[in-house]
Image 1 (tube, rainbow, N blue to C red):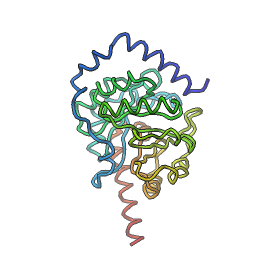
Image 2: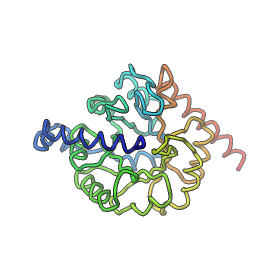
Image 3: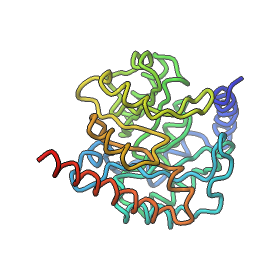
Length: 271
């Protein structure tokens, strides 16, 4: 059993336990359940924003502890002040050290799109995402059958949430459907956690025109982000590179500044 299979198996048990403890009727009473969401697709296309989706992540299965004592309030506010377009909050507890309360806190202190980063395999989790203040959910093609993914995406859209479909190979584009807003290319292979940024460049021309596309994982070089932007990517999900720093928000700000600087140099050279 590979890492992804272990995560999904554990997630099934976790969801079953949550259903018993927190029924859907209880989740629907949350103050966030009926409030308007903030569009990630719109923020990624704003010319005054960086396209960076800054992620809050305490640990990972491949790296262990990254920044276990980071405070989500401080980091999330700092990310947005640094110029990030949106936030990604890990809510998986067992493998990534996250909590639903992390997203709730981020929602309380930030008016911006928030992606709930988790392994969604059940409609219950989508209702849960809405109840904690998420604006967008992640559906991982490698975890879901085509029909199951479509039904989950439809449920999300019916609740006012946007949908990010994560792929790692061209054949997974077969799972793209009309309820998906964004396609994300994960540069990390979820079966063995190796990283290859070339995955995004290889798939950039195969993602249908009109679908917003983002690159995820392994983005620690501003030059790579500039290259990906010129290949048509509008968003860049970065977490580990920032969270490895003692001051993730400062690392985010410096990264965005370097991306802008490189872009200006290239623009002048082309002109």
